[in-house]
Amino acid sequence: MVTLYIYDISAKDKKRFNKIKRNFYYHLNKILENIEGNDVYLISKSVLVVENKFLENSFDLLFRKFIKDVKCFKVDVNNIEQISM
Image 1 (tube, rainbow, N blue to C red):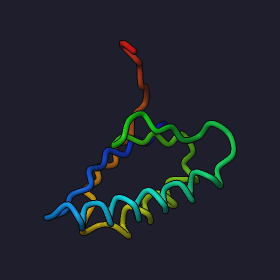
Image 2 (cartoon, one colour):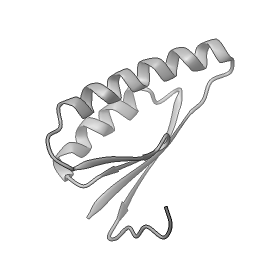
Image 3 (tube, rainbow, N blue to C red):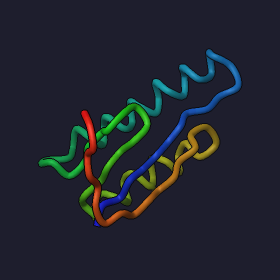
């Protein structure tokens, strides 16, 4: 089973948005640097696919850290097909 994270960074003004975005992607990249193999994919700026159940906890903690400023949906899926490029 694959887990899909769909997230959106939201803030009231541009300065706060940029601060949250910079901090969020810093922590996200720290997690991604420590992962070996092809267990995590960034599909777009706001979609993350995790194929390893053991890595889900790291991403859950990341999104909980930014719970006030990042809206996140976690979806468990059985199959993902790419229709077009």
